[in-house]
Length: 317
Ligand SMILES: Cc1cc2nc3c(=O)[nH]c(=O)nc-3n(C[C@H](O)[C@H](O)[C@H](O)COP(=O)(O)OP(=O)(O)OC[C@H]3O[C@@H](n4cnc5c(N)ncnc54)[C@H](O)[C@@H]3O)c2cc1C
Image (tube, rainbow, N blue to C red; front, top):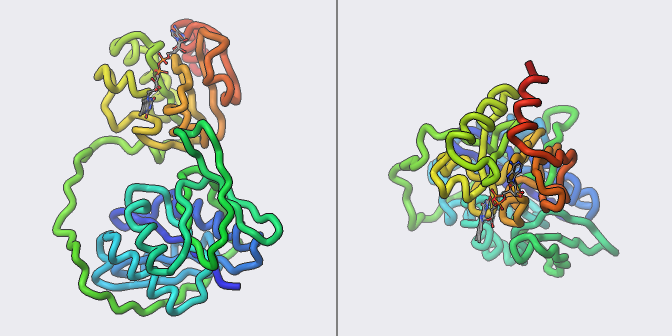
């Protein structure tokens, strides 16, 4: 029946959170389809294969000097090599900048169909159905997978990571990389030194309701620090220059999935919700009881944030 393979994404030798989520997706989709599940690591060494094997029973390690840095071509060739060595039914890829960059090439290499930006999957009558957001998240559509093989990209937070009971096996897969048209000669970090809010377990976000940059500093940053988390913002707050762009949450900012997300003075636009709806617990503080943020909040506090946040700070001591 073939295998469902989660492609592991990594940056500077560190596996991204999305990769652990994809392992869970591969196991669940594989079980529902009666297929096996595995992960694949493409790199110039096999050090990360062992780490990901704690999350899935089988890991394919494709090692080549040409895979030292991510290139869409290199990754597509690695997928092809994998499909030559294994019976691949489906390939799951993170819906990240790099993932989007090579997913279509990987589908071409496999002769597979592709569905992008998925957030759920289920099987009906033996047919895999992938669910994805369209029209900026206003509508969810179901796509039936009718091709023999498929590639799917999954948005961050679609699945929760789940460690396996014991470490899985690592299998080396040989690849003979052709000439790559694109060569990475160096990477310039445009946001060097800026914080990565996507890794935070607690996030406090301030929206336009915070009024100005000074009040943002008085209300939002201390609460985030008190809770041992990070502070973040909606787009108008970033556009007003109260906070740096690397802290923007939403469609044109970061996608975050913390354990606790506090949104203060945030209306809950579709574009903002797109970046935080996967949070485990959402607490919304808004003086307007009709604010859309309350539709997705776990706990809603209807009130003035300038009274609610100081009261929270008092309770926290
Ligand atoms: C293509 C595109 C991409 C976009 N990408 C993003 C994105 O990535 N991220 C993003 O956030 N937005 C994005 N936007 C903008 C988005 O549409 C909204 O305009 C934005 O999210 C609204 O931000 P806000 O909630 O801070 O402000 P508002 O919508 O103005 O809401 C402010 C809220 O504060 C409440 N409030 C006011 N005073 C108080 C008080 N004293 N106490 C408590 N509550 C109070 C109000 O009731 C209101 O609900 C995008 C828009 C477009 C078109």
